[in-house]
Amino acid sequence: MDRTPAPASPLRARPRVLTLVMGLFYGAVGVGIVGVVSAFLWRSDSRTGLLDAMAGSTADPGSKQQAADIVLYGSIGALALLLVVELALIARLGTGRAGARPALTIIVPAHLVVVFLVRDVVRSQGWQGTIVEASLIIQAAVLVVAVALSWIRPMGRWLHRRSRASTS
Image 1 (tube, rainbow, N blue to C red):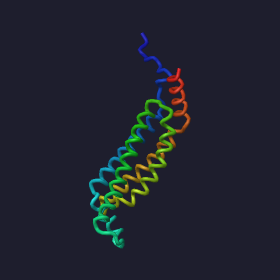
Image 2: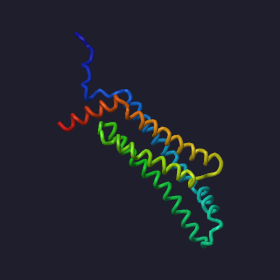
Image 3: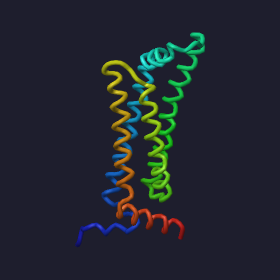
Image 4: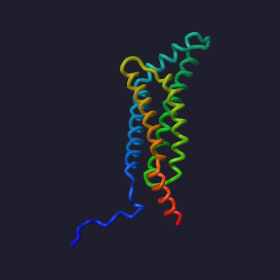
């Protein structure tokens, strides 16, 4: 009696690059969560830095504090929102939804712009600042690599088969 398992159907056979891409995407989101949480935990340093940057302004101190809070929490919120959107798209990509790949390709450059703008806002001093900045930069780099790998041929074939099978 032959005990070898039946070959996987072409629709179920996931390319190895998909496992790599999904791991990179989920790893990038994990590093991004570390960055967002760290930026939130050490927000007082960032707030002080924003207030120092507005030192020459003639606005009253209450307005300066309010503006610093809006910029700081808006920046952290923008990063968190991007992480949630990316996580949803990554989950769709893993199930073979072909539309998730172009959406991620559009979202990741937007994420890069937000990261490099927010990086200047969420500055903390000492090792805390290093954690925040390093996590944001590492996340951005890993996202770029993951998106680039998601466009190689085995991924495209697999997504095409999956989308063709789901429409028939």
